[in-house]
Length: 133
Image (cartoon, rainbow, N blue to C red; front, top):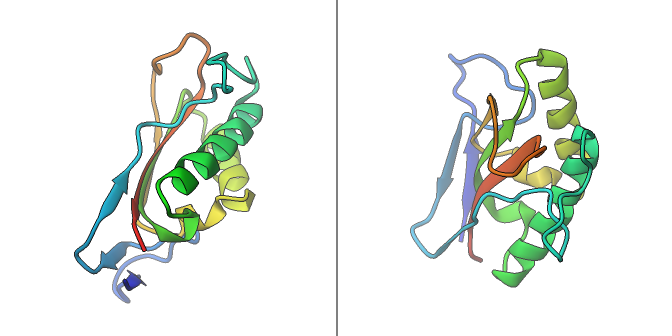
């Protein structure tokens, strides 16, 4: 399975992600939105956006491993943050790209500021699609 990440020359430079991700047809792992919940379902990092990012990174690692893949094989990401502050959005991006799942964010993706997420006091959610090797 080949994953190719492209940045067309006539488009703007990116912050480390690819404008286009090509993947050979095959099996995919479509993850549910990963929330900052511990293994008992308790919200982690109430009021702490970066603490929530860290829990999500842990959950993503476990979820991808259970699917038989890893962050290196992610082909699409969507990051939701409860904020309209560019500095908060950038801090979430920076924490994710520096984390153990940072490779997941070198591919095509979107970072969104939103009004609310599904759990009370939830500040971040990450939605990923990965190719299975």
